[in-house]
Length: 394
Image (cartoon, rainbow, N blue to C red; front, side, top):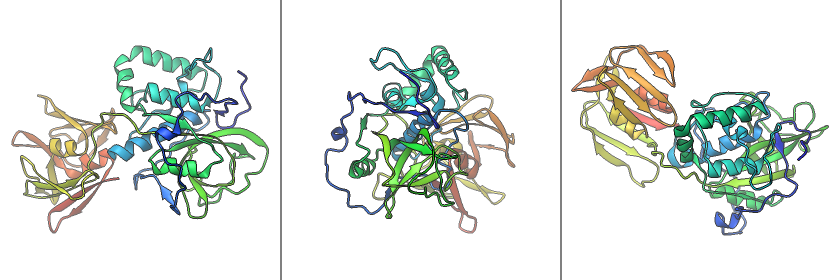
């Protein structure tokens, strides 16, 4: 297998392997889409784009983003999937030897996240270019068997090659909640020339620089794909590109839902000081649920304090409490440690300062709602005059 001249790291299969690639399994209807515009559900205030910098890991970044998108559709959690473990995992897939050079084939990454799942960035975190990354990933997996098993929480249900010339196949895949990982030819000095709004000029002109992998997440009324890139938030519109339907897509794979036991996070929680009743909705109920907590939130120094355990659990996290008065909130998004009477919290191993200390009441730990919610990627709206607070998943 010869390495082609590449810019972003995507390698093209001349003869894609057809096994397990049945789009009809996920999109049985071949009808044309009647939607003028569409986009997968996204968190509103979180930067959804990560930066691959100079590494040839665009395929790993694209599939990491696609798994994040699938997980968010189901759980409302924006989970930091590690792209480099995907990029560094090579499977021969029955072809007689896995490719070890720079860049990656799309179906190799699709096979990986289908059969092995994905790791969290906080568990790996190394950033090395191929071929060193392959050995780093292999050693990491051999020495962390529990994380290998945990990665299967993020296995995708399946994937399918789709004809990149068939606009409606891409649209129908997206409407079924399937991000479409694709590759484009890159040209010119920067790979793509776009304006401040992220619109890529058509046609994309210049010297052919190879192929770059990205994720199609929707389309616009003016016939542009909405594409999630991995060149950082300063390129395009906060990292998102708008690419003309007429610009040829080299390859495209639609990936289907994650098969994971991850707890769903409520889309919102409404609570009131001195009341045990909370209203909440996880996005699946037509009407809000009302639940009674064991203890009431209360106001202290014009802030609303909440019991960490109950609120964290509604936000899809688990809470452990030890005899040293440390509460550990564990979510796929972050791990946060709170210590009673301490203004230091620890988020994914990094110490941060807060301006109040957690309080112990009725043998439970209370903290201003913001410190729990915002560290789990939520937004808090607080009305001090009424004592009402609402937590929104972002």
